[in-house]
Image (cartoon, rainbow, N blue to C red; front, side):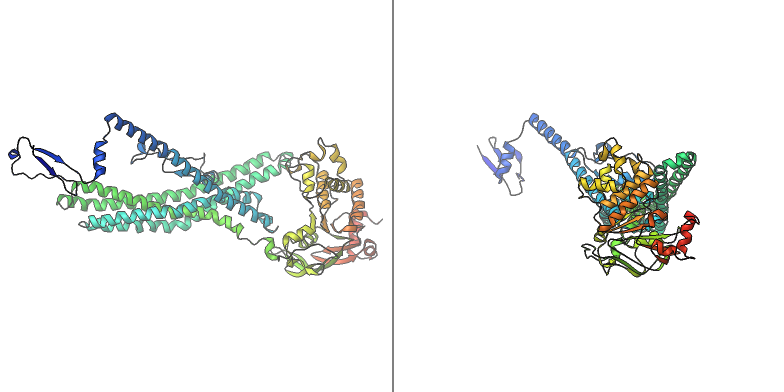
Length: 614
């Protein structure tokens, strides 16, 4: 038997014989391979059933890991989740706060979805927390012009736009520009025989962006108006619910409902105005793409008829143009949609970039107050131009009670706001122990100056925690002493759970006088050496008022007490009274001293309360 071995380095067998029939009858042709692994592969061929099982197992593993993936919708799988939303900015923002998706399904899609979701949540949590923190640090004058509802809207519905901005800026431009560059390169190289194909592919991108850039400012304006209308709706809900007692007692339910309906309708109207611009941009981009395809259609058809291109090229070019239009539209709408999100972030950074109270103060720590305070020719004008204080000078020492008195609008509360740094004097100085308070950090200053506001502020918490807010380290004995001094212990002990009783939203289970006494107790438990009380007895009955005034006289031994009041019984025991009118201190002295002035303004003030018997 003749054995012929044919082999080469490229795994190709070539048998060159002049005549196959000339080979001997016993001639056997064998093929040998240079690579052992190929021989092993051939030797280890699987049986048909084994092949089928291997494919099935491999497919199941892929399905488990990535799900289905293909070129058509029926063969694609993805991982995503959306919340229900309406046609307004607020509800659509909820999806932005929880946006996450994956282009694959299965286990890999699940992990990618979870990773994106956690990243989105962390990003939104960071910006939302930063915004809320800055709101807490803003000067009090900010909230005199802005509603609480507007602040709520910025925190909940404007801040989530940051995640969409990051996604759009990082992902869309990279993928879209890469795809456009590849497609244009292929079309320029492969279809240069039809020049219109080349210039049309290059012209789609700038043509699609021109209109988008033209209407970008208009879109941002409309988006801002939509968000402002949504904030107004939120403010209406907040104000109506916060003042529900007044609404119901005055029979204003219908009026409140009509106001909400008007604001809600306006919110939807503003959003529709913004979305009309979105539709106009999408239609314009589609028209540009369609126009390009129609222009090129005739040239390509002519090239196919003339034999310069094949009929199959038409389908390929059509797919390329569709891809170009889609990616160009993605870039165009990217800039357009950014206007909506940028409008939201503009509202967010309006607050974050606003200077806080601390910006007007240094970083020194005020360890304590030994002597007292002094105001030197302090003046202040509100942002709207109202002159509140004009070169006011006064002083107070530890162990004293001083009182700011005068008619409504005289500037008493504004003067008191300068001491803890709620407002900053535009001229003059506020001194503590001879040093300007602007040298101290705002946190250390307010640890040493406690303020009890005229409007009683009570939180939906236990009685104990409401009082403890003035001093988190206070013992239970100190809390009870403060409550007793404020005249609150008696009614607290009658509550179902005593100090552990929750007082409800805004103290809804308490009377106005009870809430005021809790606020006073909160100030008294504070270790601050300066305690300012704004109209502390306005809602108290005469008996409770007299008891509180007596307690304050004892309390002054360890503090400087500053009292703002109209009622004579509260201010007549003060060591020194500063009587104010139109932002100026016009009289200073004790009650007896000021009553000795026959034509004195304080004397007239007292006589209006008590008559000539005073």
